Amino acid sequence: MTPQTSPADHVFVCYARKDQDFVLKLARHLKERGIPVWVDLWDIPPGADWDLTIEDALYGCAQFVIVLSPAAVASPEVRGELRAALNEDKPIVPMLYQACRIPRQLLLRQHVDFTARGPDDEVALAQVLRALGVPEAPPPELARPEPSQVPPTETTEVRLDRQPFEPEMVLIPAGEFLMGSDLEKDKGASDGEQPQHTLHLPDYSLAKTPVTNDQYAAFVAGTGQDPPEHWEGGKPPSGKGDHPVVHVTWHDAVAYCRWLAEATGKPYRLPSEAEWEKGARGTDGRIYPWGDKWDSRRCNSKEGGPGDTTPVGAYLDGASSYGLLDMAGNVWEWTLSLWGKDWERPDFEYPYKPEDGRENLEAGDSILRVLRGGSFLNSGRLVRCARRYRLFPGYRFRSYGFRVVLAPGF
Image (cartoon, rainbow, N blue to C red; front, side, top):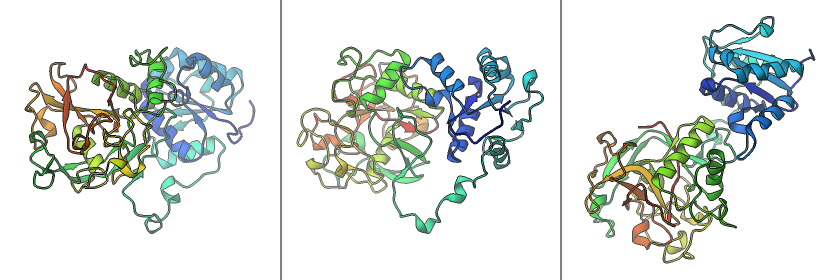
């Protein structure tokens, strides 16, 4: 066997799909410590041949990590990858995730024992670093600057080894915000937005922009999902890769979120309308993302836009207090939330109560879902942060899109 070296190329991680939650958390910790780990769920690009890409990564790796568990020992794929690593005389680091019958080829190799530890355990991580021949580094928390050195800002990007097809996410800190409209302050308010009330939400992360055509194309390529009807040859319109995807139903948006969650191991879903609204207006109940005064230059609306979608982030001056873009105009955005069966009056009224069934994923197609944000076809009154629109979940149109949230489900 060749001697272990520092990973000049990458470290191939072999595991059973059943163990992916543990593996992805562990892999993130290793990446934070500078280890160039290769994990299939992260590193196989859209449209690539799955088997050939794994084979290339395995034969080209500097070191081979195998995560052992009953599921891994029973997996033909795991056994095949182990045989290939042995045949290629790769340096192998076994990690015991769950007690199991260790393959005979690995019985004489020292393993790192995680059976009584989680993927966050610093002692076990230090053992992994030593096994990989890498000098130990302090945990990421110890390397961060002191709080006094960090400039204050409400915008906090979530850094979770984002894949090329993943939207950029922004942390919305836990706390209260004003939801809905006060007619005394906002003359454009409708009955469905009242009464204005205070609502507390826990931490969550909202996509900085709507999902783009390029991001949605990765989903189409990876799943065989039908592309939006206006895509010629199954590809986004030329020059519009960074525009919001449109002509998508609520069901299309939910399917995208499920694929993204599975592909990354992170809890992506559609935002509730409360999560959407807090991201748009912050905590102070402002009417538009930038403040209370209408300004057509800050968003893609009927008054100031080109009459079509624009690239996400084209209106930087229209950012919310958290740094979110296109929260007013460009495209209406599907949310998880239900409106009800009556177009005129919502069954799910304010104050907002998440436990009353309004976030039910299984409600039928005869119940209207809420969209937020307004579009390039709408005037300033309809692109207000509190504006609630509604539509049947099977509908699609050239001004309907969506963005995603990163948070546990309801």
